[in-house]
Image (cartoon, rainbow, N blue to C red; front, top):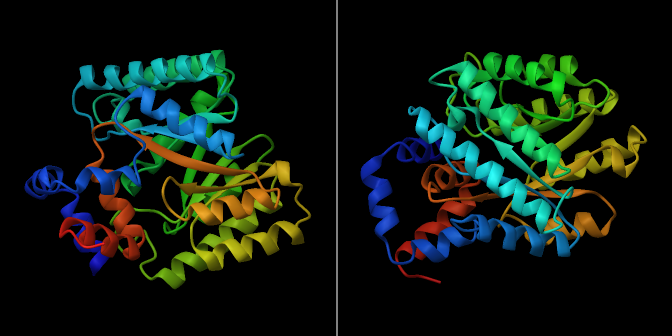
Amino acid sequence: MMRSAILAAARSPQLEQLVSAAPVSRSVVRRFVAGTTTEDAIDASRALVHDGLAVTLDFLGEDTEDAGQARAATEAYVELLGALGAAGLTPPTEVSVKLSALGMLLDEKLASDNVLAICRAADAADTTVTIDMEDHTTTDASLDLLLRVRKDFPETGAVLQAYLRRTEADCRDLAVAGSRIRLCKGAYDEPESVAYQSDLEVSRSYVRCANVLLAGGGYPMFATHDPRLVAILEDRVRWYDRPVDTFEFQMLYGVRPVEQRRLAELGYAVRVYVPYGTQWYGYLMRRLAERPANTALFLRALVGRK
């Protein structure tokens, strides 16, 4: 119930205005968002890479309904990738893109052209792109576009969401040599007809999907903060005798940083998902929905409690 309420709040312009105007919001958001500018993203990436962590950067924004905004998002990524290359932060730092931010809701060709432009910039900077997944209504179109992009840029990563009932089958289709697949639980409010509803069901699906990916020839990227799942994954990679350079863990910026360092110190590749930009509100609400403990942290800050 709390998760649904938070996701509903993410769509409220009035609440967004209230939260954005709160004096403490900036300090709270800073825990989860690197900043608003390319320079902020570069600084955050440099610090994480210095600590032995890999990075994927997300220029915040989605559900774009204007071609100009889609082009602006594309240009922001191209600028970012040039700056990352110049700063010597690639290949450990890559980028993640949302197709709806690149014009998918307007025109699939527009989104495809924009993704290809970003992939060309990433290739020039000696790094990669991962295409984020959004709500279930976009899954087929997103995977179709992924396959087209991979013809020119086979290293392009994809995201699959364990709470969708279809995902185990998608894992089987995509667990092929060279295929980079990020497996996450999922953060959108989906109907029971297409998605598991309880945390137990989602976790069980996650483990089944992880087994499929580990048994395949691809490069799994396990995005989770759940301690139980992390422990299970550590066991599974040993069972499948997976070398540490054939998979990675991923966690969000500002969430369980001690665990990120622990895994890295054990020799695992750990990538931190780092968002930046001015459109942080929807992103933050989904993070709170994913992890209710974050909600208490945010509410305490809003009322001035420590």
